[in-house]
Length: 302
Image (cartoon, rainbow, N blue to C red):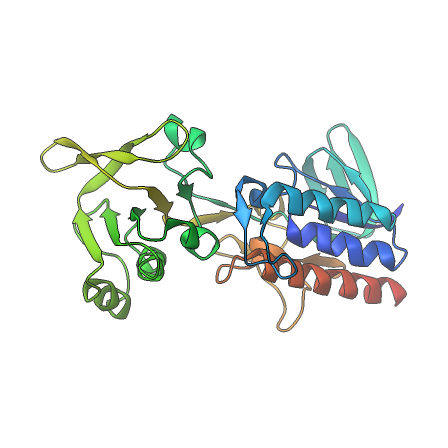
């Protein structure tokens, strides 16, 4: 029986592994299908403390992995297919094997909603992004587009005007879903243009975004929009499906106890984007990974 199993391998999972391993818990980290989490799809990260020259997302995750392994964490490249939290010890299914564990840290993250078109995958990280805070700086003095009509889209568009020469917001419906203050802020910004009843049907460019092919749903007319980048703000999906009916969820996100990493089941802790619908940053994920590991350690000591 293991003391601790960590599900997920992004900045939250690896940070939890570093702290837990240093405490002598010898955690098993099950990476999931996307090893290193979504951060590995980000080209250059310039806002993670300690890297003034910037660092590639994949390299940062590899460094965290090596650091955790240095202290005794075991990293397993595989996916958890089921969990049983009904009694101690917890049972975690990994393929055909079952691990019995005293504590679990959930760090499964979230997935950005996507357009699901071929060019999106090809140009991901090459002008297509889901994080204005992470990547906005790279689009200084360029014209860019944001897809979405809610608060997140308005917030992203407004933030991007700090760098871009123009931001075109592509709204699928006939009106914005954002709150009135967010709408007013976007409408009053001279750098923001709103386009309604439109959707992206293709992203243009070979190794970098050069434009979009868009469709007007009222007229069925297709046209091209010249932009140097595309930001998706159509929501996130927390990767919590494994825990439905076993942990308390709110809109799909795992609920934490106040000022804690503890969940509704004693001995199960959570960190990172699967419990965070507000910030969704690498540094906040890492911070909650530290919290989860410290709380798991204290739980085991009891």
